[in-house]
Picture (cartoon, rainbow, N blue to C red):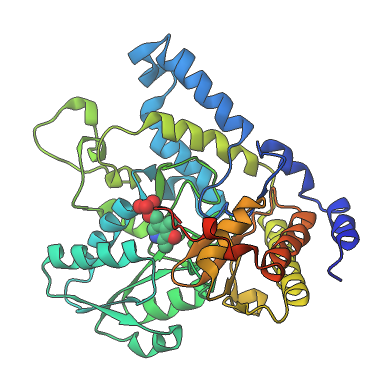
Amino acid sequence: MTTRAYAESLDAVDPLAAHRDAFRLPDSVIYLDGNSLGPLTHAARAALRETVDVEWGRDLIGSWNTADWVDLPRRVGAKIAPLIGAHADDVVCTDGTSLNLFKVLSVALDKRAGRARVVSERHNFPTDLYVAEQAIARAGHGQYLYRVDTPDEIDALIDDDLAVLLLTHVDYRSGAMHDLAGLTARVQEAGALVVWDLAHSAGAVPLGLREAGADFAIGCGYKYLNGGPGAPAFIYARPRHQATLEQPLAGWFAHTDPFAFETRFEPAADMRAFLSGTPGVLGMRALEAALDVWQGVDMAEVRAKSIALCELFIATVEARCAGHGLTLASPRAADRRGSQVAFRHPEAHAIMPALIDHGVIGDMRAPDILRFGFAPLYTRYVDVVDAAEILHRILDERVYEASCYRQRGVVT
Ligand SMILES: *Cc1c(COP(=O)(O)O)cnc(C)c1O
């Protein structure tokens, strides 16, 4: 069942279909890159206008109080919390993902200073590994980073020398998803800590951080949370860690009373301890408003539709594009996959620009991955079969061989 009529019949009974109206999506485009930059919501657009014209433009500095700008990190954190299975006080919104990783990892390394091994994946998103190396060097406990090549190697490394397990929950390229609850339990049984990067998970798959007892997590605001380019990111910490957070980039907003202007630093005994300086108000207001689209959304329904979209895409591409050199780079089993699908092709670098030129926006990840993200709040089943059909045409007619598709942009 990979026909357009079948896809239309699925859209007609889709319980999430109406949420698409909350987004400002161009008509001529099938957008399968919300895992890299979520689209603009009408709510974020309106909130930015209001913030600029009224809060900043008219009320000026008074808005720190009257519009409660000062509490944005906690307010936006509280809105992210239900999406990741956390309580409102367990999350703050601040800075960017890379910076936040440096902060939480530094805390975790200090808490397990007597243990030497930090484990992550060789194919983790590069920033995570760069940051991990620097945090380890700066912590000065003689710890080292061990990179596994495959997830099967992780279990054997969970022992009494493990300090921290640092994993990206859903792999940015393949979409392969780790067992968050199972790994968290095994790591903690061994007395170690776990740090989850939820960049490709938050807003894409149901998460139960509190229930799993996860120690720390960080995630992006601009991917499935649709906060806008460079949107602020978030941090989660397990309640038992929150009173003792000493992170290396604490600034005055991490002080228990910033406006007392005390000469001596006293960290807040809650998630504010992860803050550094003045929040980026425009970015936070955009993200705050974008998060409104999740009101009343059942993450189980999001997951069900995400699986259905991904399965339909795989089935349609494999049926229509057979013999054209594509191989599935994502796990075939839906329960091992996030909300994205990747195919390998030796000409991926030229196929993706050709696809984009023909109205299907995905992205390419070096060296040979075509990556497609499916965001159940706005992706329709017809988009899935239409995208597969356009991919077929580009492969079948060798459209990608045109010289105009051979120039690589700076950002892929
Ligand atoms: C997108 C992504 C990031 C991005 O980090 P920034 O600091 O926002 O640039 C980090 N880690 C992973 C796993 C990602 O997918």
